[in-house]
Image 1 (cartoon, rainbow, N blue to C red):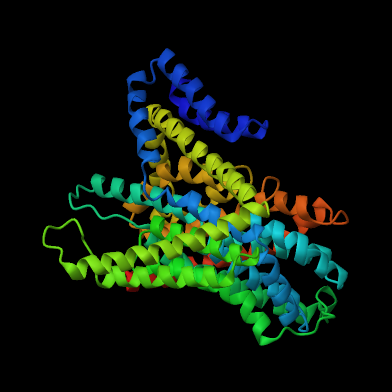
Image 2 (cartoon, rainbow, N blue to C red; image 1 turned 90 degrees about the vertical axis):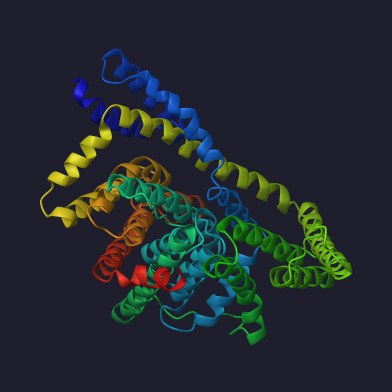
Length: 516
């Protein structure tokens, strides 16, 4: 029995989660229980747990993971400041006159919100409260409308920036380094968040295109499911469209452009996104427009000037010109701080700031608790020989590297019915990814395939998170069965997306190769 403790450990984790225990406690409790069993039966030495402190310290000091709370804050602020609502209403009026146009607008808004917020819950809830009732009032099929809202909301997991891609890049980078060590290489290459973001961009847009093509075909074959929608306010003017679209697009360009252009690290870009979201929310909540726009201009000038002509006042040879430039830079920074303070003050007065900070802390705590307890789980699992068992299983599968990858993707897909993407990423992937990379699979391409697969876990019943979010935000006439049936075609479209990226690896590898 002792040689199967690793398998029993994984089964025990699944059972405790299905019983409804909190995920972090389930992971940690299962790990502690099986560490004791392994010690009692002689299958594992408890001295191995001495490495736990280093693992926890490594997670808490990981610069890549610091970007998570900043991106979460950016998304929550945008959602609570009603920028997402304006975008939905404007795009609905713009495309509503087409057959299926309202559905297309939901997909496009989902893509824009994904690239500007990266938070699935915020996007699904916002569209479930705004777009779903509108589609139902205008004769859209309830199952189609529900599935469309749930699916468009999950684009926040594959279109960068997203918390999934940040966590995945950290795990895949470690797996890639481990694979190189096992190959006997001493000049180790790594995978950056920027490479994963660049690799996910085109596949994310590919999924958006697949959804839109599906809606157009379904609209032609079953027009009764998606009738045209004529809004009482008519088509929006150009200024209305620009006013709704430009703010999130500017934020997207600022964040992704800084990362892909090599100007800033993901953490620095995340801070830019968080500050930009706060300034946008400040304008929406009545802060002086001249002050906010002036602060934005000052910060942009400061960023460009400091990059072109950096000033180091601590040097002994700093002259009068450096002193003057330093004073100008300080004045620009103060102007930016004044704008930020005004935005925060208005957000505090309207009650947005407190809710946004609380939501950010809640989501961040959940993610980091899972990552930290997963470190305990993986350490005990390795101590029980689980990593060798996984390697033996993958190498014994028929079909070689392709067979091993098919098995791994199928396992991730099935686990997505029961586990969250964070648990799958930090528990399963460190075990299978190094073996798959050693078999010759490109690590960036592999990461994007897994990311699309993990995105599907938000849609698969019974524990798909998007389904829960939509159930809470949907009108009472929408049943859970309608939501489940509505997402079924889109799960199939996700599999089509995975197949296309599998058949055409260049979709995921071209942009990282060009940019980096």
